[in-house]
Image 1 (cartoon, rainbow, N blue to C red):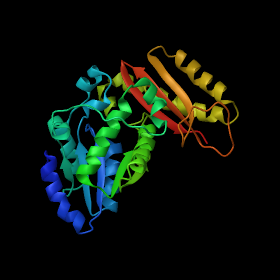
Image 2 (cartoon, rainbow, N blue to C red):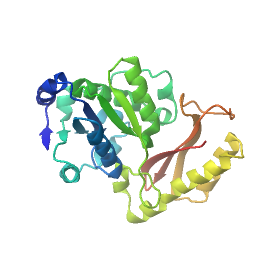
Image 3 (cartoon, one colour):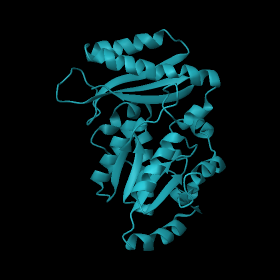
Length: 282
């Protein structure tokens, strides 16, 4: 396993390989790897000649300084998990200065309105930070294909729009959500939960599944009200939002249309730790 900390060294290594028409798969992460991340890694290894995984906690996509400071950093443990899968993985673990060169600010992006919904409303500047780091990583690595999990479904749609708008020659592959045994969507932030909270957080997926069943015969407004009422029964949770949106535009839906696909999006706090999830509703 090769580990690069400088983009100049990584580019120098990858450049001759790309000229040999080798396919490069890329899995961007912020570390604290779990089975969801590793599933993306396995898929890339299967489908490409070369696989690069980045581990970089990107400061510009955090609108909460405390969240950035407490984000789990487990680099050595991450390397052990990767080594059990393959010894041919290329790891890019840059410093903030290597990525941002002394100017740690986001570029501004427009994603045809995708950035104004859900996470964009509740985390100002988040998707400018996401666009900034993803675009820079694509420019450094020049991947053929990049893999993103559907847990961050809005992010996945935004990255697809980024590639489209900037004509970046990379195929974006969305991969299914991996869940813990109790249904909780795997997330690096889960590591910050107490054992008790981690068990209780199974409620999030339970209510999402109930909402899916409810949505089959009830209106959008009634389904949203149902979810809100269910969380009111559990004061240890703070529901930030539950929205039903068009999968393509991510615009909040007010009434059902037969030809459209809808998805439920949720953000919940437990122990002051913010967890997100989503579910296809039809």
